[in-house]
Length: 489
Image (tube, rainbow, N blue to C red; front, side, top):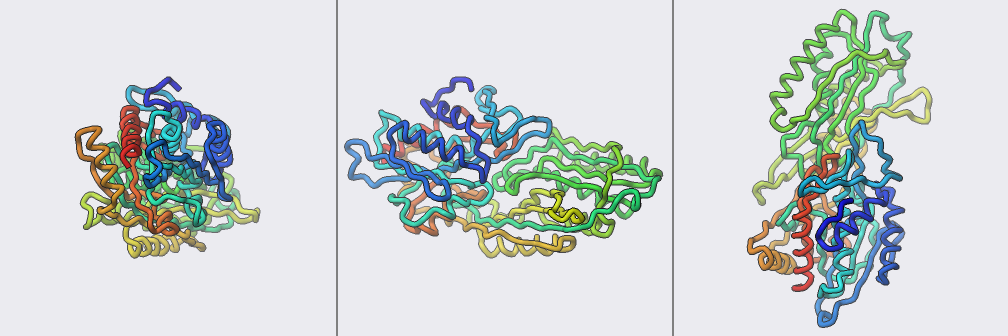
């Protein structure tokens, strides 16, 4: 990576980019952090979940000041463009500088939340920085299950103030976040062989959606972006009544907290419907460009003939699946009345995946969704609405344990210190907000209800997608802000 400013922050981030750290596979980054602490003579412990806690004493003159916790998560969302060869389990992230932005070549950058770790490590090893006692808490699996925060044991943290470094907006302080719950639906079916099922006069057609912005299913859900899964099933539902459509495959999206960027399906239709389906497709493409064209500048919807697949989904199950996916809600559901501009409730139709089972005669289609809300009842009502829609086709619908929201505390003492530090540095007032994305802070409060918390971070865009980019000047400002806060706590 090109040499960048901001002290050691980007040097440390460059090292982190060499270490694989997909969610649920944090063994290497957890070990790297422990070795880093040892090399810098910093007290360090790791718990059974692989969370890492580093502790540094107060600098002279700050021994009587109350300590603080700096918190970030180790894992990253692993998304790549379909034409990129990259193994997130072993390949380093290839970064490059584009003007004032740091980006990755065809993959997610991992600034979420590698840059938070980098700022914390830079702060505790800065020989010029004056600060109270600091604990650094680095958690695992924030992106797919909040496992690290859930498994953090009582008594591990010593201090009563916590600065979360997992936000993505310059000059903003977050004091609350949404809670969330995931839903997994499964439709089991016995695949049918084409030789006994498909009329010889049929042709196979591949439909694909690509080039969408995608993004974070919390931060970006209200930005009018298209969902590739929806674009695909909307068209399938449109043509289904017009002729005998047979579904061979359907796949779209990847992670439950990323808006689907790509999706594709392979279908078979009668040969004499070939021209009509192309006309229908062209009309549909024009309509979707009219709906999303101002936002989705790179959207590509393609139709092409392909080889006839060997197996298909039984027609009755395929029809119910398409209808269920059309009924499944996606997007922003409600805005907050308490905090203008804040999304209160949303859901993300995240992924549709065809999979084999251990039974060779049985396949399964899995559908993942993610519901968020700053209101617990709304979160659960939406969960049930998703369940009812997907139950039209799926024989199994389950929900995760979920995680709580973090209720804002505008009277926070820590908030006052962080605000003043920003005002002193930049002669401007930071915005104080809540965020629709999930943060680990709600879970920390369950175990440490006395914690006084805020969340800050540098400007990032396109998080959870290969278009992720991190502002270099904003990172410099955020690190200065963090240091000034530590000096004035």
